[in-house]
Amino acid sequence: MPREQMKLRTRSAIAASAAELFLQQGFTKVSMTQIADHAGVSRKTVGHYYPVKEDLVVDRFVDGDHQVVKLAAVRLGEEGALDAIHDHFQLGLLTRDPVTGLNDDPENIALYRMVQENDSLAARLHDWARREEDALTWSLDERCERAVHPEVSRSVAVMVLGQLALLARENWGFMLDGKKADAHYEYAIQRADDSWDLLKNGANGYHNIPELPGDHPEQ
Image (cartoon, rainbow, N blue to C red; front, side, top):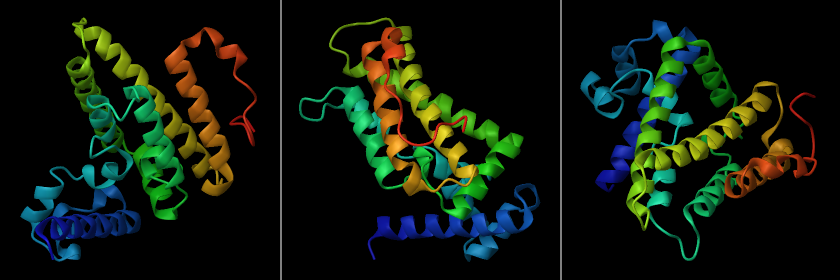
């Protein structure tokens, strides 16, 4: 088996073992050593893949491969960065990527609820978001054809990542309420389309956004 494939398998086995223990015993009651024993690896190996225990939960809900940053750094054909990121999010909705919030797997729902209820997990998720903001800001600076003030790029990064986070949070809200991902898919797609229209064209026309299909959050 290729080395990279072996590393991916080990990482997945550790994450699966951790999730099982966390859901059985609670996040705070499980140690990294217990996770290592359950996964059949050393404590050092667990720390290599997951430096802090919180990452064993948060990792599945964040863009760990920094795909959004990578998409902002290159042009895909004639697409701009915003279009590429939008298409990437739409693909995530289609494949039920937990990063988009459109995932009704019971384990993922339980772990996401755990993040909402645990201060250290919520703080780690916030840390991830800030690092992603810094990385996207730098990427936007690098790909801009003319010099711009760094805070302009940060403003764009905050708008893009904030919108992605909002969409994911909304989708997770539906999943936590028992909505099925398949039933919510059309709504989530249209919601993402409308959000991107606002990002690209500004908020002045927000009152002209058409009625969304399916259930509304307040329902």
